[in-house]
Image (cartoon, rainbow, N blue to C red; front, side, top):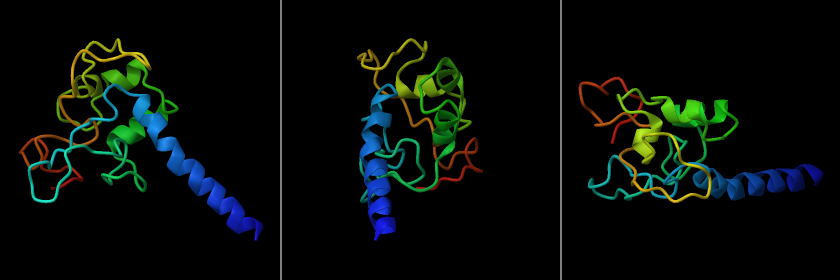
Length: 132
């Protein structure tokens, strides 16, 4: 019985914590889905740091970078190119100069997804883990 209660509490805490991660990065609630435009694809990638669009499960390269810095948007996270597409995470999230702070409004919209190499399927990204 206690194990079930503990499991439910852990699961609820995990699910409820995702919005705070979106708030902890610039434009975290509007990171684009690189497959948008394909049938059945949502416009926004809800689980920014995950391979699954809805979150949960394995982390994508940005999620690994973000986790390595204790889920904090640091200069290191901003300047990294987690997905290897030639743009920094900050550039893709709309913070090219890495000056954004939690709670601030960005002056730029997101330019891409920091955890998915784009353009998907290009020569540059052909070995990426992700396919539309």
